[in-house]
Length: 443
Ligand code: HEC
Ligand code: HEC
Ligand code: HEC
Ligand code: HEC
Ligand code: HEC
Ligand code: HEC
Ligand code: HEC
Ligand code: HEC
Image 1 (cartoon, rainbow, N blue to C red):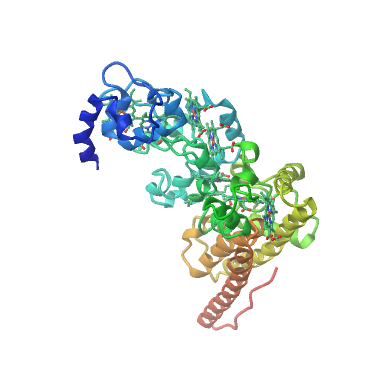
Image 2: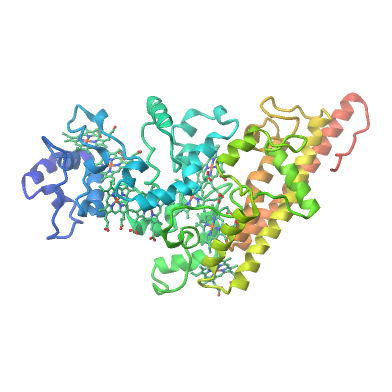
């Protein structure tokens, strides 16, 4: 394709500013902006040969049609084949010069914190570099977060100079289209998969089914169907946050004593509280990334915002009880997870299972367990990272199958496997030492 264009493009450029004719999606008669870098050949003319897809997108975009040239975002310092390294890459601050409102909102939301939250995870340095800073695995999604100047320089020096712009993940470059960003598909690449399958849950819920039928014009355009954005970016507000968040943990502790105990066990399992229940440094890292709401007011404010979105289509009583059922499922799921944590903790305590060196305490470290050496530890990781998530996320996203089969039922199965394996390990250890095995101690 590129070789073909290299041959035909110079000829077209000689005619009526030919790139416009070649990428003929620009309607006839509309002025084609002259936006260029000076002096010498223009950005658009040269890039029409070098990266024709970028030029075509830009021409279709509001920027192309409003004379916001390549140089508005990339500067003028690069303007030839030999000075490419002088090109600036657009950071959120670059967009902010013209879109202050959205940039300010974005900074106040959780997306802006995504890079820091990823970096706060223990065990990250055990992963291949390309998975993190190379923007392939974790970094491929968490690049939505803003980075400090120092981080950007450091990334560039390691060969990862691209991907620092945050604003191009929903309205992607160089179309920067509002219609694309408003579609739930814009969220899909990141909000999918093992621990946050919001796309899968939404698209197969009645909400998503209706919306997708609207997209394929089976239902009238005005039919009511919420998108991710109707609930999470009300009025186009770029500051996003939910009440429970990813971990579904919050302060203050509930009055319900059992739930409070289970939550303490989970916080200890996450290495956020120490064995006496006091906060440790990881707490501060996660708190500064706004991972959980630390007051009732902060939680309630987000909950009321969510309810307001439901109330566009449902009665407030319907919506309130639906969301409260989600809260109840968090309580139930916490009790199953806490029991799993206690079973594995018992194995460390009784010397049946050797604590991996990178764990803070002789206690499961759920954040570091992805790479733990034994099957029982990895099962506990799945109980936390996959099944508990699905139980409550499915409830909040009106998806019965995720809530029950992929969530709750899988938690029960996984806990049974953890218990059984623990009993086998105890029996094995006792046989070695010639004792009768102790049962797993309950709380
Ligand atoms: C004479 C041709 C030419 C002109 C004029 C030109 N560029 Fe480039 N530009 C290139 C080449 C070649 C690359 C390297 C990418 C490639 O080879 O695919 C590049 C790369 C870039 C990059 C990516 C930087 C990177 O590290 O890959 C940006 C951004 C860019 N140009 C913007 C501009 C802007 C803005 C202008 C006008 C001010 C401009 N270019 C003018 C040829 C040109
Ligand atoms: C509204 C701002 C904006 C405008 C206008 C713009 N770009 Fe970009 N461009 C970006 C952003 C954002 C990135 C992604 C930077 C990053 O990876 O951090 C980017 C990346 C690039 C890249 C490197 C990444 C890639 O996908 O190859 C090239 C080359 C490039 N732009 C060329 C151009 C050219 C040529 C034009 C004009 C036709 C242009 N840009 C206009 C914002 C803009
Ligand atoms: C030099 C000013 C300028 C800069 C810098 C700029 N924009 Fe724009 N942007 C505009 C103008 C002008 C419009 C058209 C506004 C209109 O139609 O009312 C626009 C429109 C948009 C739209 C709406 C498109 C639509 O489909 O309606 C989006 C999204 C957008 N810009 C994103 C960005 C992002 C992201 C960046 C940074 C990578 C950026 N802009 C940088 C001036 C700018
Ligand atoms: C490039 C990847 C990416 C895209 C695209 C993306 N997100 Fe996110 N989103 C993330 C990451 C990563 C986080 C976690 C950030 C953090 O809290 O540190 C997140 C967090 C969130 C949260 C906050 C959850 C909480 O903890 O309270 C909401 C809500 C959200 N996203 C909604 C959306 C919606 C709606 C869209 C589409 C319009 C979208 N996201 C597009 C990566 C993405
Ligand atoms: C497919 C995209 C994707 C990948 C890959 C990914 N994440 Fe995430 N991550 C997200 C999204 C989306 C969220 C928010 C989900 C939610 O709130 O339900 C998130 C949430 C988080 C959070 C919680 C942030 C908060 O404030 O609640 C942390 C920490 C985190 N991810 C770290 C990592 C690490 C470390 C890796 C790699 C080992 C990783 N992520 C891989 C998309 C991704
Ligand atoms: C999580 C996805 C997401 C991210 C990240 C994102 N946007 Fe948007 N953006 C949207 C959505 C959705 C809309 C359409 C909102 C609406 O319906 O009015 C939008 C609309 C816009 C518009 C058009 C506003 C208007 O009313 O015409 C601008 C400008 C814009 N965004 C700039 C930015 C800038 C700057 C950033 C980075 C600081 C950014 N966006 C990051 C999702 C996103
Ligand atoms: C009908 C409204 C609605 C729609 C549509 C919706 N959500 Fe949610 N979402 C919620 C509610 C309600 C919560 C839980 C709020 C709370 O914590 O109280 C939530 C929670 C979340 C969370 C935090 C973790 C979790 O799942 O509990 C993320 C991230 C998220 N949604 C992303 C998305 C994405 C991405 C889409 C589209 C694929 C989407 N949501 C569609 C209402 C919605
Ligand atoms: C834009 C309109 C719209 C919004 C906003 C909306 N819903 Fe819905 N919801 C619907 C429609 C339409 C259905 C399908 C109704 C049916 O099955 O007859 C539905 C179905 C449901 C269902 C399935 C049970 C049932 O009655 O069929 C639940 C649960 C639900 N919504 C909860 C919520 C919650 C909670 C919120 C807010 C977080 C919300 N919805 C926001 C339109 C909406």
